[in-house]
Image 1 (tube, protein in one colour):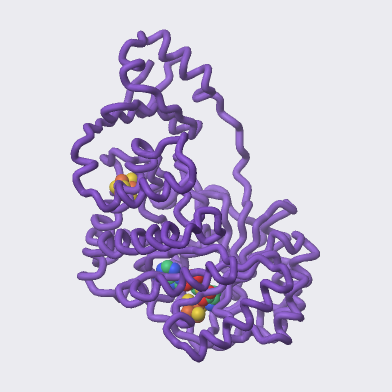
Image 2 (cartoon, rainbow, N blue to C red):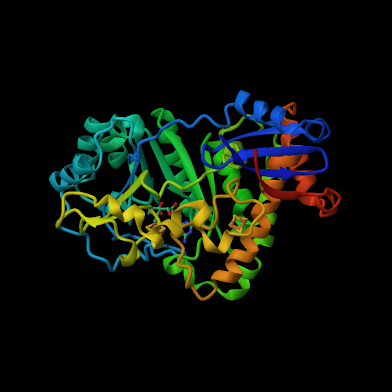
Length: 423
Ligand SMILES: C[S@@+](CC[C@H](N)C(=O)[O-])C[C@H]1O[C@@H](n2cnc3c(N)ncnc32)[C@H](O)[C@@H]1O
Ligand code: SF4
Ligand code: SF4
């Protein structure tokens, strides 16, 4: 049987990928060039590139938006939440559990409880208790800005969550707030709950990134370094910012690498932020693995999408998801890597999953956003695919990563080529 593969070649290595099975191998280029077709086929079979693990399409992550109300109104918020939005009254614990049961039967589901600000719901304790009885508290991540997380609230919810993920953009620029919040982080540490910080980087917040890393270091938190996405309020940023997003990204990566190296934080939780496992994907989670439920019963295929046109169902009106949704060409062109028109000629396709399916392709600054993020993604992928060595220890990995990002000539020295081969 003929097998078609993507072949990525650099001066020293050849990577062969079967995009359908999402399996790949890297071989020495000199050795590869001496192989005949039969030997290549044998190699590909031996390393399991043709072995397809049949996976049923099944929802394994649920984003539960408890409300769109928020006690903040962030400049970048993709949901455009604010104190002006009323807390929905029609989405009580009973309804949440009913919807949840319609969506998932698997106890393995990862559940992200979010909003708006979920802690602004007066019944948050009951909701979390019911959910934790269903999936187990270790699987529940609570996303919050933490402003309402006083001692009383914390003691009410602590037994029903596995991880608290807190946004800290405001905390690092306000000393008074920081002092208050640090007491809360210490309390979370003391009760043994996993702490994770989320930090959205835009042209204003980049300068506080180091302070954010210091906090993560101090409270042994995981760290999500998020670059602002052009969604909701985030779409309001200037063209200039999108055109130069790669510069901002590179600067942030270097700040991060400097921090880890200077503080010898190679094994700390926050240092895992750039561990890119290089997993080529034929499709993203939005293509059947993720469901995002909103207070009015609307269901979307991804936590970042609230575009009516992309709605999967409304669970208030219908109890089943019509799976023909995933056959729609507009849906595939957002979530299936090989169907993303804007990526069709890219050398990094599959190792890069393409532009996030949540982003409207008709967005006025889409092309500027795409150009700059692609420049950065390609650099990062190039490092992972062709520079990174399995033999490096963690410190070597960080030092080489930094050297690579600082050295603009390094990539130009290396020849690279991509083609499709069928054997
Ligand atoms: C919408 S918030 C809801 C939970 C909570 N209020 C909070 O701020 O953490 C969920 C996460 O989305 C992130 N976020 C919001 N808008 C974003 C955007 N345009 N780009 C990237 N991340 C964004 C927030 O920083 C937060 O980590
Ligand atoms: S990002 Fe979070 S804290 Fe900020 S407005 Fe949105 S929901 Fe509220
Ligand atoms: S690098 Fe850019 S063009 Fe290439 S696959 Fe990724 S998102 Fe698409």
